[in-house]
Image 1: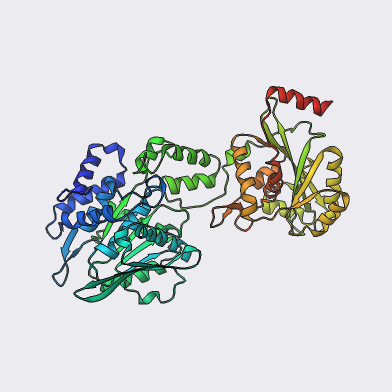
Image 2: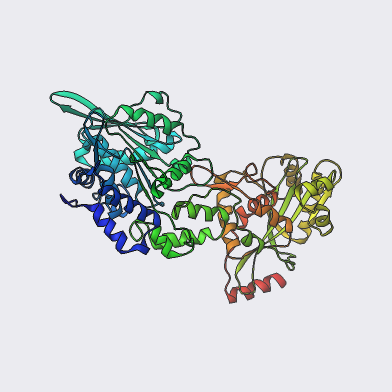
Length: 574
């Protein structure tokens, strides 16, 4: 509950100073900036204005998700510090009017720290409580779907508040999307409307906007500043507009978010003097270690409430598996901009898979995964054996054969830094005479393996596979099509990633290690992933063949107790 006359920024500042080690340097810098502003004569802090904004949010805004769904907002101390600064600092403009000092706020916190609370609170206050007549309010993002995520959450906040919903119309589009939110009201007998509309780069007529409030969402994902620049320049005719940039860190070197982050850091460091910006960033200090739970607590202001310790522990376990997930953990949960994106797996995890000898696999069940190349590239046949250790622990043993044209092989070895001829001598690669892959040799290899092992089925990508699959069908093999889409590949990708981390994937083929180290993942809008040959700079064919087969073998893997292990051994060797 917000109390009249209380300075919540002071309360937070004292807490930060008193418990110095619990807060990042960036928060100390924000507090120091606030204290310096209190000594200035050209601006002043209007606590009534600040507390009125926060009281509005706690009175009229209602959570729509999670354990607190249906309850009124209860702003945390760090949020109250931010809003006191954003809505409380006042000055006189060129015309002698009292207006807010802050026209841009940049708040960067890790995922799950109630960014939506901040965004929806500011948006609803801009529409209903800020005293602006004819307020144009926008949520803006790279694409329409992303812009609509924020708009839908704001709409849900309004729908759950009878006082706000009473005079509001929410116009919805396909799939529950929000086209616009319109608040109608009268002032001195005259009718006015304030509205909120989601915008993206595809929206026509951006140049004609005159925003009072803009929520710039997921700015780290925006690769150019077009929408930011257009909306920022459109605010010039408003007396006290506000652009709210509430984000997490991102990955890559070209995003607008990284540029804005760098500018914001310079404001905190005192390199840039820009009174129009409020900046609050929760991030690790220079020498903090990413695997230290005390650092997780320091950079997540809602640690223990909306950010659960167990949630971060689980994300950390995933981050240890691969370079890609480590980048994700750093960016989304520690709020660190990862300026270069690389391959998916950690090298140390991949290298653990290679063993000198897979042991005797004769007679064991296996599933084959095939990645057939275009005529001049690598083709891989992956035999995946779901088997057990002596203790009954399920493991996956992978035996692979690669096929490559022999023409210009020496030049290819130099270009790709792969000793194909040596690998051929060791039995890991088959050289096909001429310029193309000989699919008859691939067929003959599979026939030979069928004499040694119990091949349950052959999984294949239909690209380039028609003739070979026809021949395999004719031989009596069960062939299953596996398309290389995230919807198909995500589950085996996830599963083999976990098995690799636990040291439960073994191969004797060094070329699979090479392919796995090169993998770059494509992630679709639903968060599902698949290995991407386009994004991977080097060959990944062996990994693709492996998880194509693992779509079936992951269903075949289970633990065996001591009694079951004896029974299994008796069945194999009876």
